[in-house]
Image 1 (tube, rainbow, N blue to C red):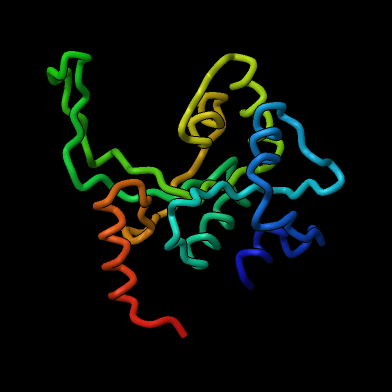
Image 2 (image 1 turned 135 degrees about the vertical axis):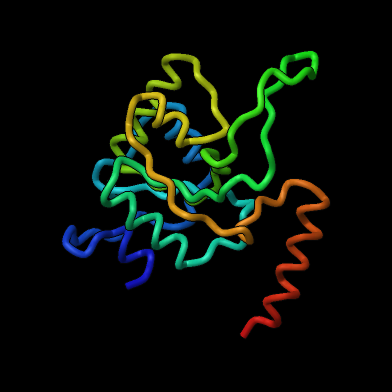
Length: 174
């Protein structure tokens, strides 16, 4: 079974809406909190376009976890010791990294929960860089799925260099 089958669900008999939605449509849906009920999948996968190394295996595990929970997010443990700082840069506290993870995508949610989170965020004037945070603020339980260290987000020149190394290590594509 591949990730598309997991997303559609074996017993629901529905096909996923698609993998490449129009970005303008996604923004409209997020802003207005509406979706096409005729083509309403049971779950939605949110993924950063700047994370090109997502494996089908990680996607499948995240979708499967969402089927058993109110949401699922790929994440890796923090390797560094995080510091919470004041606006002036002074350390306010040191956080226990043993209980911290770094969220990645994919993030998978039941469509009704995610749409409720978008509507409430819009109504409440809440902005977030993380869809899971919008779901969490409504009290839903989101589970962490072990992510992958090579599921990097490419946003800096250093990230691009690391991406090149990952590609080199994987060798030529077949």
